[in-house]
Image (cartoon, rainbow, N blue to C red):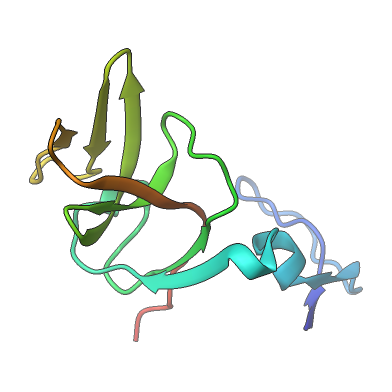
Length: 128
């Protein structure tokens, strides 16, 4: 699906409006790099609001991307899904929330843990 792109828009000082359409954008090409490995999740809860993931945000998750330190990932911890920021240090892995009301999840020996995919894009529904 192609969507009209009207060009760049200043986020600072206003500029004269353009009366022309610059291009069309295939939104799938910009957020879905690996179609067969891309899935969608709806965010629940407020642990990631500091990363601009409010409740009900749509997460575009790519299982083909390698999870890097600092990436926002969907992980499975002891059989349950969660979305957090991945922190890898020397011999430790932690899943960090982006809200000080929540505690990090320290991955310890004996825990079942898998990075399920990397969050590639966040779509926030407009408020009603």
